[in-house]
Length: 156
Image (cartoon, rainbow, N blue to C red; front, side, top):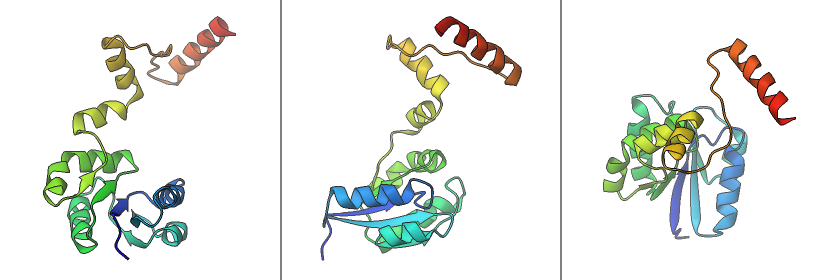
């Protein structure tokens, strides 16, 4: 069978990994072939995906080399990173994958750094006149307790 999409889903062994694989396959029936990858062996990920491979951590030096190898070996055309560390590494190396004909589904590195940090995200949104929820920054446990008590008193 010829598949339109040949996808690597990363962090497939995590809590939502098997569910991500299952939903992707269900959403585009008979058009997607999924290679699930994770740092741990995971029976659920193996069960829902077409193929499973164990890979190094997303922030390791070998990670990109291994994904390039897997992309070539299995004729992958899309990578869906499902953890921050993998998204960071893949976003830095998007051009390498694009040159192989592989689309990495994540934004550029700078944007990835911003959206992976809620405080930075809110700051960028506020700077661009986009409304954000009320938030406070606590630097330690004591500050967190004080801020949460005050916030609770104001709102309830």
